[in-house]
Image 1: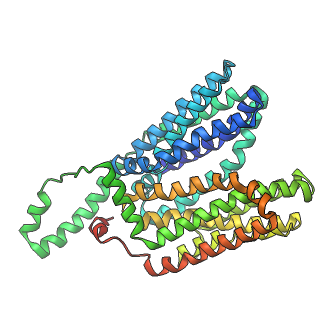
Image 2: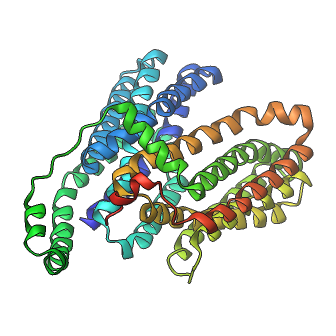
Image 3: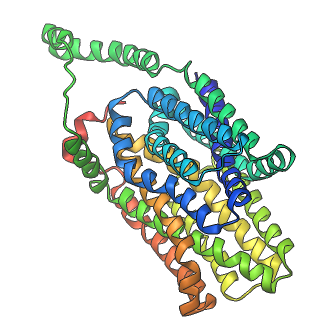
Length: 429
């Protein structure tokens, strides 16, 4: 099942990374209007942000492989419909917007289920390695997918690029169809049950047998109560809340950098080649960081996570002083190496520390902050730079991202093992 999970996540990551380039080329070919492209892309993002809390609740109520399977099948159907639309030459903006919204809804429901799926299938000692492998696949997909979508579009048209995306989602769904967290849970329960039976029998005698034999009744709660309980899990862990908000600052600053840095590179550092060198340096750093994460002897993973995020100070300072291409590329390499360390370590720590019954809701809050922050940074970068200037904005942003993430180390050190009092009994692995 672990291999199926890895293959499915790799296929889904590649398919997800194909969508933005395919839609961009399709809309620009059909309309040539940047405003129309913005409408289509926003049509995916808005329902995604609005429905993530709902997806978190469902991820904790329903077996995660079923949620992830349904999400991939939905995205498969939406991309297949886009492919048919483009191949028939219809290119209606309303249709593309609606289908993008469907894909956004699927992401909102599927994303919180993935961490639960990893926890349910992968043993604790193997999770960091699995998260690192998924991270490598995601990183490489972000590099390969735009080139692949562009090549297919140039050779055959955007409709075939969308068809390829649909096929990849279908293959991902097929791999997920062979995963059963129920079977994995039964194996874990049998192992823990035998051990618990001996302990209880020695301590309580026959009374434990009656308690054990009592039927388990699953308590059904309201949606609002589930959301409130998820927020209580977040609020009761200061380390998680501090780190998540700091990561939101990181994503916002990344939006600023990815808007202002290419303009600076093209205008003042020698053109598009300079920006390409900077981006590829970051990609190499990201992949190397992800590969290094499970191999380094890390004793305080959250401190490494936050220090890695704070490294984004370096490219922001390089942007502020309009550093030469080599310097900016080196700074971006270090920052993305830090992100590479951050991703698998964060996934693993959160999975270990948050009760599995609330993991979907807690991660949906984390994902909501991340998904919202970067587009906001992209949107306001140019207006802010027009008011403050690139230098002041980049320096301020660099200081803020470093300060926010380094400050989050303090609550993570003092309260990593804290949990809400009501949630303590549920923390059984």
